Structure formats: C-alpha cells, structure tokens
Length: 552
Ligand code: ADP
Ligand code: MG
Image (cartoon, rainbow, N blue to C red; front, side, top):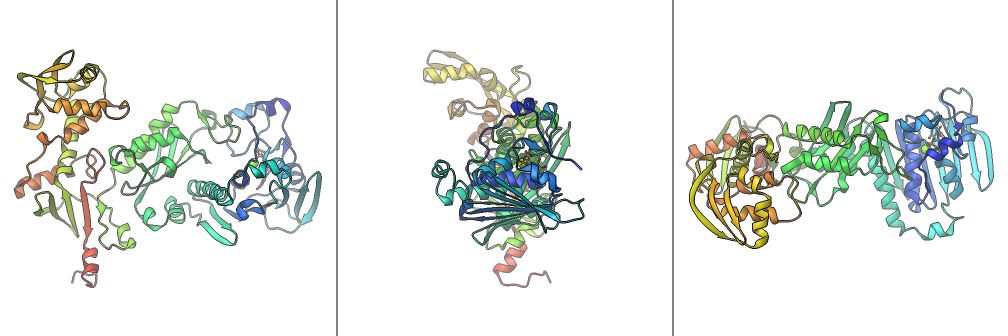
C-alpha cells in the first residue's frame, strides 16, 4: 500500500500553495478531494450552520493505517507524490500535503479511519490546538473527518466571511460541481438536517444531472463520450431549449478536478454554435481527461485552475465532441402544451423528416406537418433561413472561414453601379472587410464617404438589392469584433428579406422546403439559434382531449 511520507524542501518550495482554508467551502473541497482520491464510491457531507459549527465528510474509500493517520495531519505529508518530478505529472486531486494540517490549524479536527488491508480496529486522531491524540476506534473501511468550530481561534478570518447563506451557497455549489463530474460516486449533502443534494452514483451523467437539476433538465439532454488524440471528453449536454444567461452552469473538470475552466467553457459554447441564441449559455457537464504530463495542476494556490500544455488541442477536442454529439440529436422542441415531463423525455429518436406530410399552413407563416405520431409545426421563415445559411456556407466553402484567399464564394451579379451614402467609419469598415464582403458576393469601390456597388450577391437564383450591403455593414459594426466575420455575414444574409421564400406556399413548395430543412446539417435552429420546428406529440392531444392514450 502507498504510505504517507514527508515531502523534501525542494518539492515543498515547488508547490504553488497559498492559504488553503479560507472559508467553509474550501474545507469541504479539500475533504471531498481526499475522499475521491481514496477511491470512494460514496461521499456523505453533513454541514451545520453553513459549516461554521460542523463540517463532516464520510467516505468508504481505502482508509488509512494507524501510522499514516497520525502522519496525515502533519504539514507537507502526503501519499500522493514523492518528489519534485512528480509535480509535473499529478494524477490525484491532492498533492500538497497541506489540507488536513491547515484545517486542524483553523478548527477542531477529528478523523476516524480504517484501512482496507488492516484486519484490526480503526484509528481515531483528534487535533485540538497543539494537542494530538491517536487512539483505537471502531469503524468500517473508510474515513470520516469532522471539523468543528471553524475559525473560532481566528476571529479575523471569521469576520471576513459573507452571510451564512452565501457561504453555504458556495459549499453547495462546490459539492454540486463534484457530484456532476463524478457520476460514479454517490453524493449527499445535508445542511442543518435537510438533505439538499443527492445523486445515486450510478455512473450515469443523466442520473447525476437529475439529482442536481431535476427531471426537466435531465430529460432534455444527451451524453457525450468522445476520444481523439489522447484527449477524452465525457459528460452531458442539455439541449438548447434550456439556456442560461451566463456560463455558470457549464460545469467543467480536468482529469476529475472540478474547476471553472474558461478554455473548456468557451469550447463548449462554440460546439453548440448557432443552436444557442446570442449571449446565451447552455447547461452542460464536461470532464476532459488527458495524460497528467500534458496539464499542469500546480499553477494556482488554491488549485482552482490548471494550465494545459496545448490548450488549442483541448479546445478543439471539446468543440468537436460537443458539436458531434448535438448534430446526431433531434433537437426539435417539444411544445409545452400541457405536457407532463415524463412524456417530454422520450421522443428524440431518428430523423423527423423522413415520412413527413405537409397538411396545411397557418397564418402564412407556419407549416403544419404530420410526422409519424407527431404534429410538427415548422416556422417557414426560420426554416428558410437555415437552408439559405447552409447553402451559402457551402458556396463560400469550409464553414465560411476567412482564409483571405478570396477563393470560392457566393455567386455575384453585375449591376448598374449604385451609389450608397455612408459615414466615413462605415466606408472604412467596408474596406477592412472587403474580402469577407466579396466572399458573399458584394463588389464595390469606396471613396471617402460613399461607396459604389458594382456587384451584388445572386445566390440560389435570387438577386440581392444593393442596400443589403448596408445591412451587412451593420452586422459587422454591431457589438465587439466578430471572431468569424464571414460567418456572421452569412448568418445575417441568410435571413435577408430578399432571400426569403414567399409567404403563401403551394403544398409542393412547402414540402420541398421541409425536406430541404431535413437535409440540413443542423435542422432545428435558424442561424441565430431560434428554433425552426416545434413538435407536439400525439400523447399531448390525447391528454388534452382526455382520451385514453392508445390509437385504437
Ligand atoms: P494531500 O491530499 O495533498 O496529500 P491532505 O492533507 O489532504 O494532503 O492529506 C494528507 C494525506 O492523508 C493524503 O495524502 C492521504 O494519504 C491521507 N488522507 C487524507 N484524507 C484521506 C481519506 N479520506 N482517505 C484516505 N486517506 C486520506
Ligand atoms: Mg488533500
């Protein structure tokens, strides 16, 4: 068995350690990490008064033998690394040998443990101030650490804490993060006698999300498990019918270490791409695993960040995994027509467009379609925008990326030159983006405050108006510098009125439109992330009309 040893000075100096215990949540994090490092299947966390009176973490991991238990509360003692070289390849959550002694310094600590290989009794270690007592104790294999009266001896620290509610929110957020990224471990968090988090440890991300976010969110999700170039991406993606205003609900972990990683969060959002409305974020859980030597875990004093040796590779792997997992899913929205949640969960198999029949049009705007047991309602403008966007993108080549070669591009038609008055900054913007504008079919000459349009886009058999160039400039001017200006232009242009289908469609034209939507790479959202299709399943009608839910 691996034994605890004291680190040498060189190693201690190499480790980025600051103050380890600053608030109840940091105690909880350290104890949970120890439990996970011990290979536990279950972590039971009990907290009283936001952790100020009591924090108790019990696990069923491998436990400690008596000498190790006695050593574990001393400074710089660890079983997880041996020397300075190990710091470069950390594969455990802990490695600094600082947590237990720091906690013992800030509170009264009691540890009860029994090692899996020791036949005899377990061990209890109590540290109170300078006093340490080691005695025999009864316990099944595993470890329980109780921390009482946190910061009672350090009033300045206690004063710097927020309201108990806020401190407990941090505890709960930390536990939730670990529960979501470790679905194989059962988590339970109890606060002042009330159970607030509970996951089953079944190994399924869906079950973990169910325990944390509830049924509606878990039901609207797909799992991801993708491995390429030594990087494994596992987790769960909630469909974009549920979105959030910020990235807080994109829970990320690196080699099982739960932390807020902006590289991964950014790549997850990129992976959702145009499925997400502007400025919205998904709910997702993503754990990235890579060889320990490809990531530096020793960069943050509280272990709240890691550094990837190749963060582009990680971002690419995550983005590909996410977009791949979502593109095989049927993301048509289930209408919230008095649907109960059980029924909303089960209908995401196969393509919805194979056996589709257009049965009518509502308000010259929505196409009503019969698709197996469902009624699909297609927003014909949104559908047309999606189709236009994918065709235009295909014309421009490789996702509309700006390679500066001017190769490919949307067909362009010569027109009688037309003068567009512009502001000086608009003219400058047009100059800056000449290549991007040319790729979507605009040709023009600029002088100081005006511009002569000589060619306009003529894709898909329609000729755009010269004024469309002004709209394109608005798109480029809006907000911050777009990361992919050509793609922004395509999205905007795909929605331009001059490219849209007429309002009154014949049944044949409507059927063609729906089929073409079905052939799109991402059929269920317009280029700006609004849904294209609503689905109402037959069961919803049956319930609404109080019929027994059978067809005969
Ligand atoms: P670190 O985790 O950085 O090694 P800690 O102070 O958190 O430092 O723990 C010291 C040592 O005590 C660990 O290396 C481990 O061997 C042992 N230990 C702590 N908690 C547990 C636990 N829950 N189960 C088994 N061993 C533990
Ligand atoms: Mg530790």
